[in-house]
Length: 112
Length: 113
Image 1 (tube, rainbow over the protein chains, first blue to last red):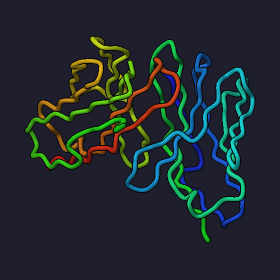
Image 2 (tube, chains in turn blue, orange; image 1 turned 180 degrees about the vertical axis):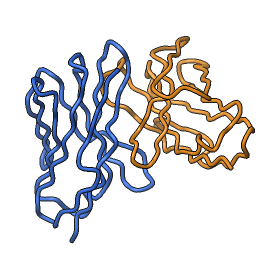
Image 3 (cartoon, each protein chain N blue to C red; image 1 turned 90 degrees about the vertical axis):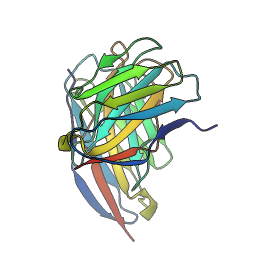
């Protein structure tokens, strides 16, 4: 099955700095890569996703890049704000198998 | 529009007791999932249901059973709870099989003593 690894497990940045979270996957058949944000005590919510036919996608201060050859994808948050503090999860799926595999999460702390 | 609703939100069990976590979605989604979340281990798939009438094992199915009662409801049962099942459980649904946004419930925190 798929194995998704996520780094780092914790990340602390100063407000206004950029944050980068990286994930690797093992199954070359995976074709959909979402990112979820989970605030303390809340449910995970989708913030951005990318499909395997696209190399980069941007939505305001967040962007995701995908390198299919190397089997890795990254989340980039620019101009971080305290409200960006949360746990971020990457995931990979193959719509032939109806399974989403999640990384172990990155706890981002944005210091004011 | 409630989205995904799961109950109970909190439960304490003794080892060997049984319980059922209930989940319902009102978005007419075909696919439903049960995940458990443990510190440092992300979200691990327990069982999923691609459509009404079908269920399949995920990464960590041992000790659990599921029922897809109808298109809206997908329940998770612990027949004989063990301390290793202490976790936060999330139900989720998606419109398309293995694709598109996962909508999560609020989570159920289960403690097994």
